[in-house]
Amino acid sequence: MAELSRNRRFPLGALVGASALIGFSLLATGLARLGGIGTTYVPPAGIIESRELRFEDRADGAVTVSEVGSERIVDILAPGTNGFVRGVLRGLVRERKREEFGSSPPFLLTRWSDGRLSIEDVATHVRIELIAFGPTNVAAFARFLHDRSASR
Image (cartoon, rainbow, N blue to C red; front, top):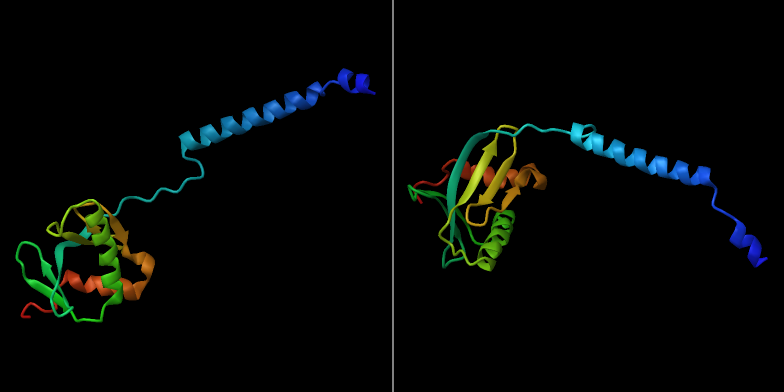
């Protein structure tokens, strides 16, 4: 019985067929990647408006939002409000602390031509696309593109 299994050979036709199938798959995948077949191209969006902002904690728990350069106050976030804004900023600041950048570099809030709104830490280059969090949360940041409280 042992001699029968040693004398059996793997069918050559199946081996050639499997090799041809693997080769064809690799060739087709390579050509598709090089030719861009099956990929989606999204043209880059242009900037409609952007603003460099600084967020500073106050002793009373509020956060002052000011425009970099003019140092004009854009808004003041009352204590215990604006949880989404505070959460996003907390994440960005944590990355800054990890990389030891400090609090002086501004954040860049940008509205793009395709309707997106993003906030980027210019120190760490971490960008958060706010559209992923829904229209209510986008509006929480969009209001900082225009002064709400220049006199506060």
